Every structure is written in structure tokens, then in C-alpha cells.
Image 1 (cartoon, one colour):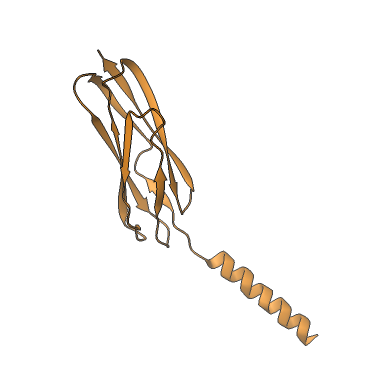
Image 2: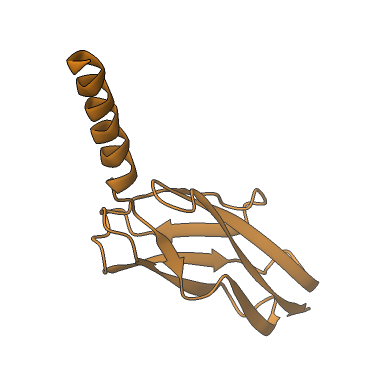
Length: 127
């Protein structure tokens, strides 16, 4: 009986420790950006997305995809983001090879919740 009580107590402690464990949480100020109308020859444009760690563990941005076309260059906060602190994801878009409407997205991968977040940007490129 004592052994069963000890096992139940140990399992209860383990379950409580797992549930009580904190986590990082990525909360973005915006998830999409509209550049409006831009000129193909006006040069690169940049959207800045602010991310706040609303969790209670350090948030680490592990990667940001470039969208696959080579026209988008991501940069982001490389240092861990403390609980309550903010970081950035910057997306620089080169419109020089395009014209017309565009809609692009990148995926931000973190160690927190949510694990993956899609950020979008759009606009219209006049020739």
C-alpha cells in the first residue's frame, strides 16, 4: 500500500511539473503588410514585424523562410527574446523584376507557441 501511494505521489508530481512548465509565446503586432503602390525601379522596400514574447520562457526565432523566389530577404532578432521583451522580423522585397499585383509570405519558426507563424506582405508594382 505504501508503495502504491508513493508511485501515485511521484506520478502526480511529474504531471504537475510538466503542466507547470512555462513556455515562450510569439505574439506579432501584425501578420500582414500592404506596401500599397510601389515602382519597379524605386528600389527595395522593407516591412518590419514586431514580435513580443508574451510567455514566461525565452523565445528564440529559429528561422525565417525567404519565400522561395529570391526577391525577399529576411532578417530577424538572433538573440533570445526575454519574457515581456520584443524582437523584430524584417522582410526586404526587391520589386525590380516584377509588375502588377503581388502577394508573398514567409514562415517564422520559433521554439515557442505557435511553432510556425506565417507573415504576409502585398502590394502593386507599377512598371
